[in-house]
Length: 268
Image 1 (cartoon, rainbow, N blue to C red):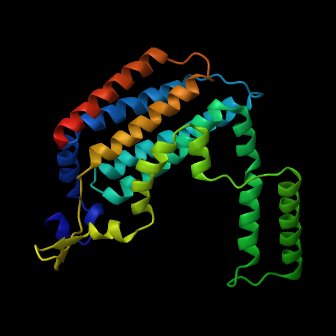
Image 2 (image 1 turned 60 degrees about the vertical axis):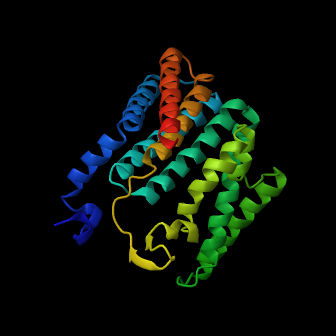
């Protein structure tokens, strides 16, 4: 049964054939992603960090999030889950902005750590406003006390609510935020422009059918964003972490530039 007619869709056994075709079509990008992933994991496993160095601790803790997001982009991408690949690549960008910004500045590292109070306050605020949960008076008192404590710390320590854009600026990656991140966010928010890709139109703009199935178009481009982000993150991390393979990373950057060149040729 053709994939588009299977009730299981992306979970059907026929996906094995789809994956094989997509992997062949986007071979260069997928090979580089997988080599970069293995390289990054090896560096992470071999890292010896100082527990007293906040930047080292935070960057080392964020690297697994970066690499698992990269791995997830491959798992969705090779199945033709285009929107989901963009969504996960967006996460790669978000982690990259944090890693690079923290690696560049100890002050940013401290602000990142403090910003958890803002997140705690938001969670507590949502918890106390739940309409589907009947809190006891004791529960409400505990929530209010915790909320007041978080609020006091935020005021006393002047803790800001740090945005993705703020991290991008601190990382000096604001152009990437305004281009790649903005485009990938269309899928994350299920905006109208993203939904248009699901419709088959005739020459007159009339809807003919719903496009529901594997969509490998643009996969190499999406993966290339993830590749660049991971290389930027590792370059920043290597300024902090001892004993890293900087020459190996340079070779991967060269392969990335070669991939970019190939993608540019295919567009002309």
